[in-house]
Image 1 (tube, rainbow, N blue to C red):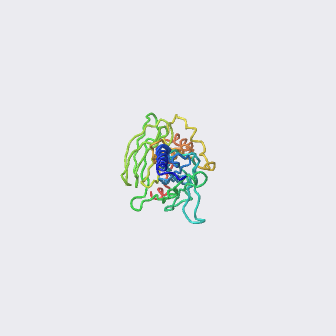
Image 2: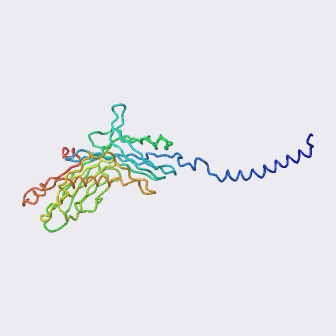
Length: 337
């Protein structure tokens, strides 16, 4: 029996009714569910090297050292919760490429920046050498990091400007160097090719900035410092390229004891396998440039054996010449005097 036209109309109406009832509920469910990629814990992110700098420190009585500092940023709203590594190397092809050190990180939260500070022996690098920093694309980072174009950065090591004065301490005078009652020493200084100048004293909580130049130029000045403990009073200068020099002169309290830490041997770098990355606070995207270098100079001075020089100064009589500077961070400075 063939269906009538009325029966067909009734069947079509029922079918459309069910379709209208089902479609809104399905559409609502689709809008309620977030996209699969956004809800996936393995959604790709991006670690990027956003800055790379070098700082050169030459020390008399110790090997020249270079600080390589890199900043790594998690540029996505997704936490990276696995370990990662940064390689520091001297740029070149084949055998000319040389590993200089590495840095290890445990994780890097979304939007945060980590700093890697790797110390390199100066004999491995010379002026105009290129230094590279590269994230190691292995393990979890290889599958998580969606952009490899920002995983490597390079910088040319330069300590002397193309135009302008070479950085050197032309004059650093202290008086008196043997304190018989007063706790103050007066000083005068002249530095050529300098951007910033500090003074370090043995019992001060930190360096004190003495002078600055917008670019690099001659800086002169005089002043006084309170000194309560026998030890070196040190002038430190840097230029705008990140090269540092220093000169230290011991000051003695005849009845004060010598710090025991001055007789300790410096820590060996042989035990350091890799530097550890430090995650900066939220909203912080850079670190103070000079503090780590000034701390390194202070640590070197603290480990230096000043006993012989202090003993000689304690036995000093009227008419003897003032003691010679105990340290100069620029080996060529003596040749230019």
